[in-house]
Amino acid sequence: MAGHSQFKNIMHRKGAQDARRSKIFSKLAREITVAAKLGGADPAMNARLRLAIQNARADNMPKDNVERAIKKAAGADTDNYDEVRYEGYGPGGVAVIVEALTDNRNRTASAVRSYFTKSGGALGETGSVAFMFDRVGQITYKPEVGSADAVLEAAIEAGADDVESGEEGHVILCAFESLGEVSKALESALGQAESVKSVWRPKTGTSLDEEKAQSLMKLIDTLEDDDDVQNVYSNFEVSDDVLAKLTAA
Image 1 (cartoon, helix red, strand yellow):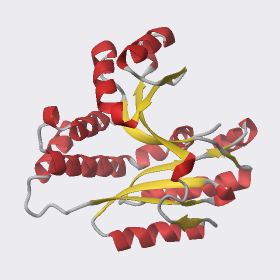
Image 2: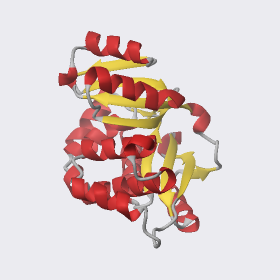
Image 3: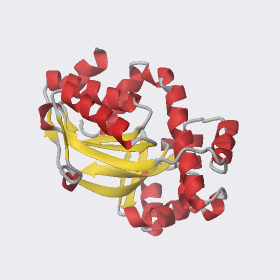
Image 4: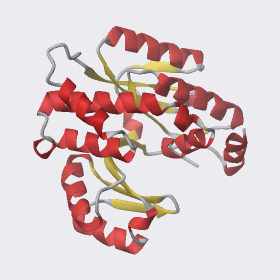
């Protein structure tokens, strides 16, 4: 097993999803507010806001919360958030990328550095691990949207680069720069996606044993619990045996 999305599924099966619901909504609201402040409150004219709202709906965020986050962007007392990326190495030498929206760079940098240090890892300079990843657009659909062949055909027509279909659904990949155009074409063909976002996909993986995998899980969990952290990506890989143990733990 490789990749953070599967790792998050383990966390969800452990019951973490319900416990984090309000925190997830808070982070979605922050992204909506920042998007509206930067590009305007009209989703039709603001691609970033449109995607943020779409992802909020996919996570069942109440409509009132979405509207409140948009209105907040027009307020004079709205905090100014900076987009910051942190890079480093976690347990077992796993490459980790952390994306944050923060109103205090010093606070966030200090916190993220401490998380890495406590896990036995180390925070690096910008660019220290990004070269191990590709920045791509990722569009996901639920399994019932159609067969693998139907989704593949729609993806090709939309200008996507690759499709991964499985029991959990369809993951469509495209160039980062083409995300808005491809997602719009796919929406016309397949309907609204479950999520549309830019992600960091690892070019190669780093294998972990059970002990290191548990340490990495703790690091990712701690990072995602931080209010300023929006996304965490890593290039870990674990065997089916280790995955079974982590899932059962």
